[in-house]
Length: 400
Image (cartoon, rainbow, N blue to C red; front, top):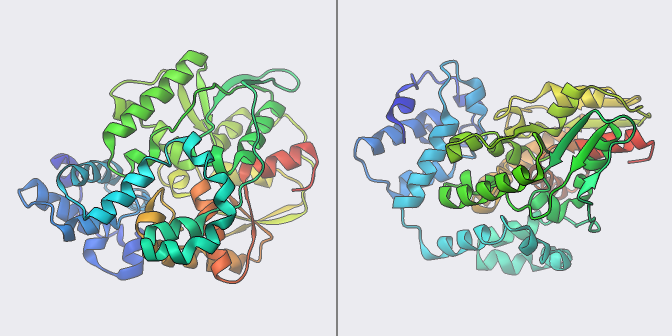
């Protein structure tokens, strides 16, 4: 925990209305300003108590406070450092340790995640039992999507028409296991826009879930493997279609202490820079676009996905109220903090429903699962798609 970064905070309070947990509870210690005060106490000698650890655990790491802060406080770096310190010195109770061990031995490993696919349909029926075992297990069951058919991607997808670029593509963990159709759409969109798409074998987790949860050693190990895979592929740009993954990969230099040797770009960021080449066919849809926190706040990417959607004829884009407030997904937050995540998810679902849109567009698999689950709880429902899927349908002239 860097004392100089802590001292950058002048406790002005501009962060308070942007913080989801402060919005929910109105507690000072559950605001960025309050948590920085606790960090300072620890640096000055106060041990990490269970209560202190609870306030740090309750932070979503959504980075809305980073956007709101007029003093440029690096709360993103501070909370990552703090979580690593909490994991190092704080002893959690046995059941919590067991659940965290299960999550981090499962989610960062795509092959293990794929083994869950056959049982996903039973998740809803098993939820009451799993809730009794541990609330986090019940939360996992409630979030489980209906997985689409598996899609095997080739190692290289050739550009359609003149080649304009060569890019690598991250397939991801949750994205690859539960939303393979998003990866398929991403590869097709890039190819239709004139890119050779290199999809190296041997990909694993990029380390995002681990680094955001204070498991720095695991994060570095997974990051090094990801860097090695794309370096071997010889690409200079890696395109990422999951907001949390892109955010972490852009910080590999800080995590690993060395430049990875390639540029990381979100799909919408890359396509906006490349410019359109393929014809957009009409999609007569009303669409609500959801800002994933690690895209809007951590990467500063807000205009690009909206601009891409606006290029599609007959598509009407509608804004979600309180778009800057997190939906409650936040990586593993909705598993480890299910009550707070549920409240935030319900709040977001209400905002989405108020738009009257036919389709919700999100750029992060966790957000997709979180909001879809909240919409089901509300007794409604809305189709959910990734930006890549909407673009893919328009470029190919097919129904979404």
